[in-house]
Length: 303
Length: 210
Image (cartoon, rainbow over the protein chains, first blue to last red):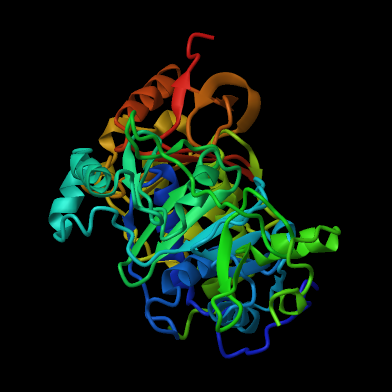
């Protein structure tokens, strides 16, 4: 799984490179350029039907297909993991239609397409992070009409979003939004960071890599250029806080990373492990061991 | 028809476009994308075998062939607009409709900064659709990093010095005004001989006096 997969040559000559036709790529590329010029603004684009259902990352793959070249090395992750269904399916899609190299190593990738996580490893200026976005409009659940939300963005009228966060505080005593936590981009546009856990929000701020967001069903593309100010919305007396975990990763011992809960048996035993599979693997290769050892199924109390 | 020889037909035919339309366009786009994502940083284009008609440069032509098609109204500066060879070349390779008014243009191709009309005459988008604006491909002789005016904003870690030559006195003043319209405004992609530099509307410009 950690080996870089060599897949030279396009395996199916019936498709254009990266599946999309050239006119579609030009249209998407123009939208990407506008998105970069106006960070956080959702640029409408004529999303195509892709050979997979909406919700599987049709926006993300259209953005990746418009950006990717034959010398790129692609990493595809789904909730931080390289080997879950969505990641495997979309990686194979690009292997078949482009023949590019793929990798699971974050630092080897030139393009990383992600579904709802930002890798733990700090990204560099030569990398592009492509997000799959289901609902790009952060105001959509507060105001269903597109004409109205568009006006709200135009007028920078974001009071409603603060009311929503305040209602969280009134009900729960704290801001209970844990994912798709709204951010303010370069002091102008409120943006949905896609349903990444709010744990990842601080990584978006001043990130060195270019961040591109594609929403296929909703037909929107937006972007955050490198070194752009991204601030999670909050209140003076209720400042933004990242999710904290009270234990380290069970198999690599990492702290200060995002953890997934894994149920181990029918007795309610569970463990928390790194959601970023590459990060966890690298740590274990480097000799780090968590409290459940290298194989949690053989650990004491889990038989 | 029968009197025309093959050579006379070829003589009138437009020069070839990108040698490898798929991968050349992709690499040119990546340069343009990085250019706008890192304003003021010179992006080298890969070696392209392009022989566009004068006065078009390889970089400017590559950008137009990569980004324009029948969906993008294109404005040409007065010198280009009266140059049938240039127009035939662009029309043949992109099918982009030419427009008379800069305000209707999705893209503008300007071969000489002296021929650039007032920047405010181009489309700046509107408050609800700031993306409905003109992107200007501007040919310049020289692009120099670490010298000249100071750029700040998204894509720039702290600040970045940058200059173009030639640069008429009012040009940077107009670009400064353009950035005050943010999120409206035009974006510029400077095209040198084989390099591109981006200057999106989000970039703040200072240091004009120097």
